[in-house]
Image: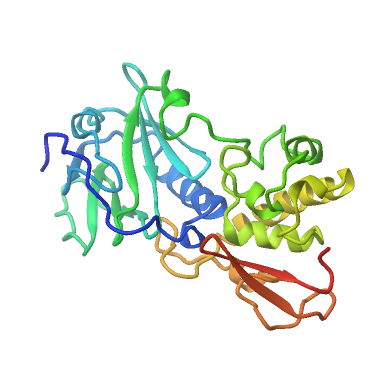
Length: 299
């Protein structure tokens, strides 16, 4: 077990391909699955098998959570926020990274704990529930902040608007897109403007709104912004209802796969017929990410 904070780990290579990172629906699915299993339960033990993941883990602060009761699990962008009671009302901040899985298993208080899995890096033991974090690529994160300082935490400060909360609509998109030469899809994926809409759902929302994703954002009309905002909310809500999209590593807290891949209209359908107009779905690569659209009905 670790007791001291380590130096920052140097990660070789480029940033991960963000198209593989769990997006808002996947993180929301994990949140909604974990909260009823953990809310109201007291943390009885923590085990850390390494002092860092993508960033250093505040080892002492994580161990200080022991003895506190989990009061809620929230989400901000792609971060899971495990709220605890007691002094300062601390919050454990969890990011899944590319390949992270936060699993919750039922157990009994006195039963032997299961053996560690390959790439399992930390555990939180709630007595009759065991949280296990498995992450082969180690681009996930675990941090702690006080409840009062949560909004100013370096990982959360400066994040943009939540697309499923009040305040996100066509008027907002129209205002933030004026005079912007950046592509529509790039704007939707700018975390300082809008959070949680990653590569998959940005492509899908543009298709639903009949907007070509590589268009200059400043060229959008108010009507197109209204359609795009509606499409973003609709596609995210549909993905959440389906448990997210499982292509590679993502699973829910019970290792259940998401099934929204069955409903994708353009993503990873290059060369196939558009489900709406029969045109051909095309793919381009922008900044290392694949962009999909229909040349027939997206303008």
